Length: 262
Ligand SMILES: [Zn+2]
Image (spheres, rainbow, N blue to C red):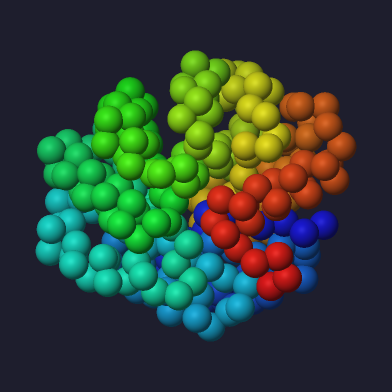
């Protein structure tokens, strides 16, 4: 087993006591690489530092839509960090109209500016989207995709919608990031979506400390739980688990340009 957890938040307070143990546990139980994701300036900076401490950890930098109200004051520093070694993507960025913590106007400004940054540094994006799939797609189609010059656009992380939206993101060339949400019951339309995504376009993640596997609901999630995501994909698609593990790992290496031997 050689899995890549493509979306972790190991520098969040939930891991303050035992982050190193959690990382060791992942690396001794089949996880070979991690992509830790920034959500604001502080977590992006911390994540870059973390990636410099561990050969197998890579990072993104970016301002999550929840923090978009602050974006203008940190834009310059995010831009500088984006070129750091081991930064493999800009993210997580996008729109969150479910919680609407920052104003929709500011979310759009931050989203557009960071798509622009991704184009400039020639790195893919990690998208966060809640209750704003139509709006996210329209910004991508108008302002991002025409400027990629054949490069891969990125991933829609924690995909949670049904077959209609999955088809749209696939058509635009995005990878689909799946996590343990797909193990939750009463998630029929998401599970239908999983069945139609070609395995070649799926990457797996935990989004830890959030979204533990259904059996561990209420507990903290951690990178070892990415194995449950692979298992559920294999079950839903009727594929051998080994094929799901190998292909999703290869996909993660491809989209984030990760080395094969680290
Ligand atoms: Zn996240």
